[in-house]
Amino acid sequence: MSPTSYDDWRSGFRWRIPERYNIAVDVCDRWAAADPERPAILDVAPDGRIETWSFASLREASNRFANALRAHGIQAGDRVAVLLPQSPAVVVAHLAIYKLGAVALPLAVVFGPEGLLHRLGNAGARAVVTHAGGVAKLGPLRDALPDLALVVSTDGAADGAVGYADLLAAGSPDLVPVETFADDPALMIYTSGTTGPPKGALHGHRVLLGHLPGFAMMHDFMPKAGDRMWTPADWAWAGGLLNALLPSLHHGVAVVARKAEKFEPEEAFRLMADLSVANAFVPPTALRMLRTVADPRGRFDLRRLRTLASAGEMLGPETFHWAGDALGLTINEAYGQTECNLVLASCAALGVARAGSTGRPVPGHRVAVIRPDGSPAAIDETGQIAVARPDPVMFLRYWNDPEATERKFLGDWMTTGDQGRTDADGYVHFVGRDDDVITSSGYRIGPGEIEDCLLGHPAVALAAAIGKPDPVRTEIVKAFVVLRPGHRPSEALAAEIQAFVRTRLSAHEYPREIAFRHSLPLTTTGKIIRRVLRDEA
Ligand code: ATP
Ligand code: MG
Image (tube, rainbow, N blue to C red):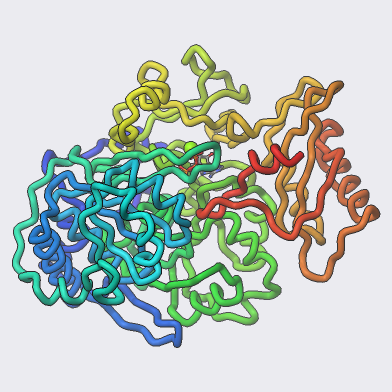
């Protein structure tokens, strides 16, 4: 049952975290027992054919795979990497790892050799489940990865890898999952590496339970009849895995799996129409690309699309209003980080959704904007967004880095490294990451506000704002702009865009410099890496 009022829900909220809890038993075996043929994964092939995986088939495959991994020496606590695009094998691998009490290490297929070496080496991974592309990347790295004992390939045995299908065939379908405690490590996710080298955030099984209230807000209380989830976000990222895949399965909602090299907005709309997607989680950069498609409702049948959620970067009023006009939907924005995800959210169903605000604290989490001494900031005073411990969604620790874990906390506040402010109605407004906040003529300016304003100009497809050092003003605002198709860079257009921002924002916020780019530096999770632009500026 869904609550009727945000305030009542929040004030009456109590966590119910059992002492023993295993993600795989919760998201798979429970459904396989109650409703075995229920669809869990809809695997879309490049030619459009759909293969449906039921919860029962996921249980059997994951039991087989867990037994096979165990036969190859994988034990509780071992880190097992999953380096595969969206596909049923990703789910089978995660479930098997959880059932063994081992630790899943999701890795994005777009990582190059350096990215893989850093993460696999740092994590001391014992095994990698991947495909032929991953096997080829790992080949030259294996000598530098002494802990890596087993490579499994979904494309069959070759080049030192054992075949995934062979393992499934050899493993027994009977397994008693390890009875993990809710606090036992289940998952290690590296942060996006936006501000520096990625850090491994270790999470307990309970992290999934910690996501559920925020997930409920993002999707206006899933499940409802006909719900079906899709996200273009890689399931290797906290967003794809914990904001979409695992909580949907927890609710018995089928998830669409599609391998895509890159995000194509027209294809995304077509997929949502053809698969009758009801719930989508689409991060801001992808939403901004969807926004360049004219008349989506006229061209694609999107009547089944019920909820549209966003997280990972600031959404901003432009994109929020676009969804209302073009899709007839309110985007439910959420906020969190790999270390502590989904702690602020909007929820249209509860009337908690406002253009320009991330939303309100998700029931169950104590979130505040604080001053450097840990005291609460006043209304509308900018400070650090912080989350109080203990919190079931909070990471256990950074991997092998007690000092970094220690630095993350100020007393019982986990600091986020993000600046925000709370308004008089309790809505939190994201200002910017600590490093991205621009100081100009004595003002502190969040880049998001400027970027959002730039997006309002009809020629602008994507924008990033940074502070460029300036002897007089400390910093000036410099904007990097990607134009929409049909527009060409010119000094006249730069001046026009500057004037456009100047009339809408305060004079100190307008970009004194504009640079046109074909693309912006993005993390593999689609976030703008402003530090790269700062180094260039
Ligand atoms: P790293 O910590 O390695 O620099 P990262 O912080 O980008 O990388 P993630 O944990 O994937 O890695 O991202 C979390 C961050 O993303 C948050 O701390 C915040 O800066 C940003 N973020 C997430 N959701 C939102 C949102 N709704 N609005 C604005 N920013 C957001
Ligand atoms: Mg971070």
